[in-house]
Length: 291
Image 1 (tube, rainbow, N blue to C red):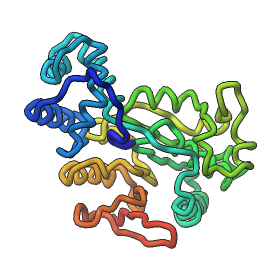
Image 2 (cartoon, one colour):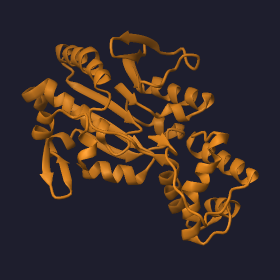
Image 3 (cartoon, rainbow, N blue to C red):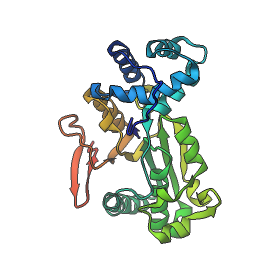
Image 4 (cartoon, rainbow, N blue to C red):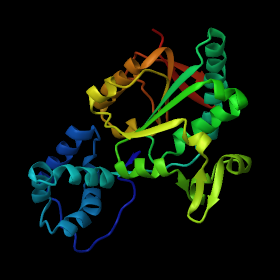
């Protein structure tokens, strides 16, 4: 998930006043933990302006009232989530980091679990966008376990704020752009060509379960079953320090002792949280829960 990248132009879009921007910014932050920088005020106009036109609402102040008090506020909040987030992802994104995950996390973890007789693995993809990341992980597990996968219980939980992204992920059909970093043999083995794109095969899809989830909802996060690995790539860069601490605390509580957190390359918890131990590998850093 990423925040308000790109821009749209609409000549007739209303202008947001500084007071309206502050009120909307605080409202969005309170709901999602997403912090919209002051210098991105123009993106509020570009992204939300067309929606105001569709609803025939004359100002951003009136739109905020609509979000708070309208009978349609629940449905409109879903629209708001779609508009304030942009999802840029692909299968097998950040190849070097995925090699670290495969060789340094998944392979030894699978071996350890098998030796212990507990062939159950749970991974949480937090901020999964349209599903490319969790499906990549499911394919990696197929590649590592091969026929032995049938004797395992694999549960990849995949969540995103956007209902539209979750619907796309559940469909599991992707265009060519999503495969820009995917090895051709992987595409051949795990996808079926359809008129509308390439569809993930059922044996991969069954490892992943998708749902909407707001990382700012502490009760919902606490209700999740515990994970061996948490993926949250390119999400926390859009949170302020307090929200980062809150989210990282939730990840820590969700992980089993010895579990790992995987963030995006541009993300760090340095100066934000000391509950994880950074583990450096050529190709990427992962964060370990020690106790």
